[in-house]
Length: 236
Image 1: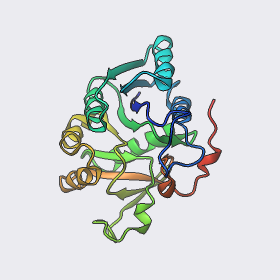
Image 2: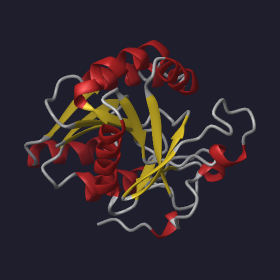
Image 3: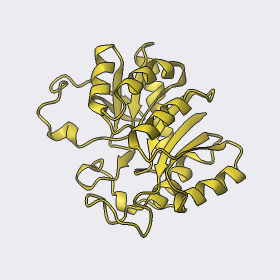
Image 4: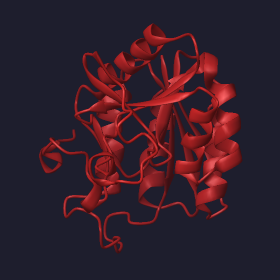
C-alpha cells in the first residue's frame, strides 16, 4: 500500500489568478483528479493536509472522506507553506504501509505512475539495504545546470524505466516506510530548503533517484519533466 500525503491549499483554484509560470492547462482540480485516477482507487491510503480557507478543493476532498474508508483529512489553518509541510511530514509517520509518497498539489502524473513508483521502491531495495529516496519528477535542471555536485558522477539504473541519481526535487518524494522516520528527520530539519535536504541526505549515504523520462511533473512552465506531452493528460 502507498500512503499518499497530499498537501494542498486553495491558492490558484479554478477562477483564481495563477502564477505566471503555470501552463495554460494547469488547474488544481485537474491535479487532484489526476492523483485520484492514479493512486486513489487501488487500496492505497490518502491523507489530505489542507491549509487555509475551505473552498473548491475542500469540497472535493470532503466528499472523498465521506465515500472512501482509506481517505482522511488533516485540517490546519496556518496559511503557511512551511507549517503545512511540517504537518504533512508528521502525517506520513502514522500509517503502516509499504511506502510514503509526499506530494504537493501542483503535480501531474502519467497514468501508470503508481507502477513506476513501485519500481522505484523495488530498485532502491535491490541496490542497497541503506535508506533511499525516489521521485517521479525528472527535473530539467539535471540537464542544464553546471553547478550540480553530481556533475559527471551520475549513476543510472534500469527497473521498468531508467533511474538516475539526482540532488533535488520540489518537496515531493517517496521512500520505503521502513526508512521514513530516518529520512523525515532530515526533511524536518531543512523543510522548504529542498536542495540542502538532499545534499545532507547524500552526505549521510541516502541517495535520491529520479525516473527517466519523468512519470510526474511539477506544473511550472520552464521546468516540466521533458519527453511527455503533459497537456494531453486526461482526467476522469
